[in-house]
Image 1: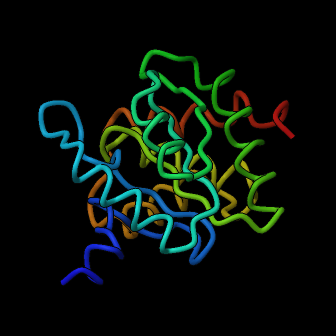
Image 2: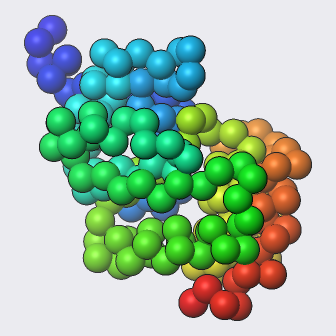
Image 3: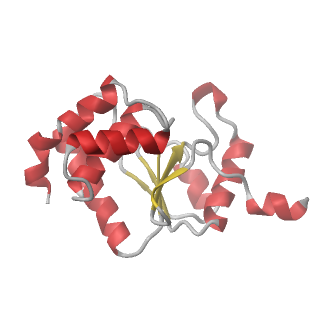
Length: 169
């Protein structure tokens, strides 16, 4: 039993976007009223045991950052709020993410939950990075990955891509 707990618990809604390179999940420990500090600790232990080099929080607030430090997990805070202009907010996030991936880091990206905005951010990143060449394909790939349809908030992020993509890299 002790060995199982030493391995931690996989974060909720964990999934790979780029196998063994980039993954997403909801905030370790859950979100808002469902947040549990003990579960957060177990999920961070799992991330450390799984060999993640960096946890990236896209939360507008600094929740969890001290917990990562306490458990010796490298973290970065790249806040993205629902009302941020994606034309200015996403390019720096994607540039940092790409730099870490280019260095061979294994990265987990999280928000409060894995919902429409996370879907839109991931689809936009796949476009920005050149891994997918059209917004329609990016939406389709992310919908298949997450086994659900992308809603209006995510689609708006993807639709904003042409406006900011050329200046980003």
